[in-house]
Structure formats: C-alpha cells, structure tokens
Amino acid sequence: MATHALVPLDGSPQSWAAFDHAVSNYDGETITTLHVVDPMEGIYSDYGGGGYYDAGAHERAVERGQELGERARERADDAGILETTVLETAVETGPPARTILEYADENDVDHIVMGSHGRSGVARILLGSVAETVTRRARVPVTIVR
Image 1 (cartoon, rainbow, N blue to C red):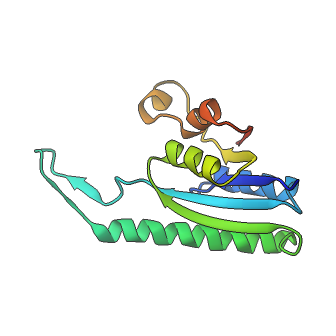
Image 2 (cartoon, rainbow, N blue to C red):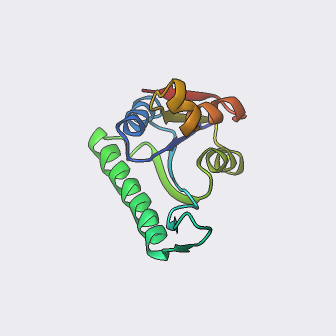
C-alpha cells in the first residue's frame, strides 16, 4: 500500500525543511503540498468596528500558494524523484490547523510532515502553534521538522 504524505507549505525555511524531509523519505510514494490561505487575509479594520475587505489580497495569497507548489515541483525535480513519486499541490482557504486536519482526513493522508517555528513562552501563547494543534488532533502520525 502506497503512503500519502502531506506537507503544509507556508514558504518559511522550516516548511521547506519539512518538504525536503518528505522528499528524502517518501520517494516512490505520494507527496501533497498544501498551502493554507487564512480567511482573514484581505480583511482590514479601522479598530472602530468598521473595516473593509480587499479581495485582491486574498487572490494574491492564493497565487502565492500556487507559486509555492511550483517551487516544490522544481525542488522535487532537482532531487530527481518526479519519475518515481507522485507530487500533488493544493491551495485551500481556512483556519490553518483545522484546514490541514480536514485535508488529511478527506484525502486519505497517511502521514503529515510539517515545519515548526519553535516559538515558546508568550509568543507561542499569543500566536498559537499550528504544528502543536495538528500534532495533538491528527488521526495520522505527524513529523515536526525544524
């Protein structure tokens, strides 16, 4: 049975390290990169209860996700695995941790490989940790790469 690995990509060095880890460990299998666009992308507030929505910002975020998928394909090609490995790319919109988990459940993912920024203390409390949430709630094994 073939393994399907999911690699969330945000363009950070940590997410590329996770992708490189997946490439070196899942040659001959299926690797899917997933870029999650936060639904708040494009919403700006004036802190007075009003605000506006910039649809262009959301579209640019989706395009950036597509570009990350193209870069992943180039990296996989440079690693020489494209003849033996299925590489899929996806861009979804939603809260990052929830979207990663839903994608894994809906697409028969066997393993999630993701980068972590390694925040701790107040920064982790204030910013949250997508990697931590995914690790705690995933139904499949998760590998965290730093």
